[in-house]
Amino acid sequence: MMLDNLDWRYAVKKMDPTKPVSDEKIAGLLKAIRFAPTSSGLQPFKVFVITNTETREKIAAAAMNQAQILEGSHVLVFAGFDNYTEERIEEVVAQHAEERPGTREALDAYYDMLKSIYLPRDAHVNAEHAARQAYIALGFALAAAAELEIDTTPMEGFDPAAVDAILGLPEQGLKSLSILAVGTRAEEGDWLVNMKKVRKPDEALFVRID
Image 1 (cartoon, rainbow, N blue to C red):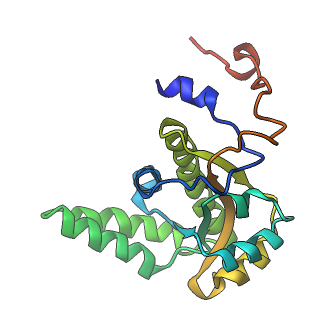
Image 2: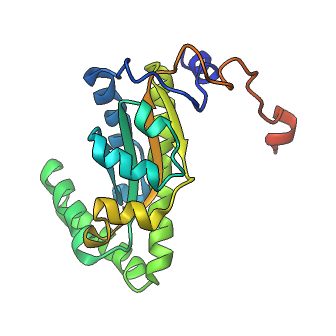
């Protein structure tokens, strides 16, 4: 069951480079990311799926040489929009109108309202909003990986400016937000693998208002 798999998953500290994740499982993981909900369906981010060794070596150097980046078979870099633009919002409108015939008028009304809110805002505010949407997708990726029994290590410990430069993100209007190393846990050498999962108890985490 999925809830059991959430207990199975942990942030893997050592991966086995001889056991790459299959293309089929990676496809399932990417599908979960693509299907993640985002505000107004904007999906204001891209996910870079990296297997190239040279690129991963550069990213590892910008991420305090965290070994999982090289030991795993894939590295996913979540990169959010640096701002919302008329063109970016119009791309969403056009796709929805094409895939849902007869909705153009309603779409224009809704997204015109959205533009009136988003486009005048400071770019930093919009970038933060886009980042929150990307993190929803990261959450879906972690849950899907657990269900598929794919080992992962989410990371924020890296130099975003360096990763941005490695992937050419400024030219694409993107900012790196998080890294997800994907692979298979090593049978030995991971100090965390047999540790009890520690989380706040229900009474400390949940506030019930009946």
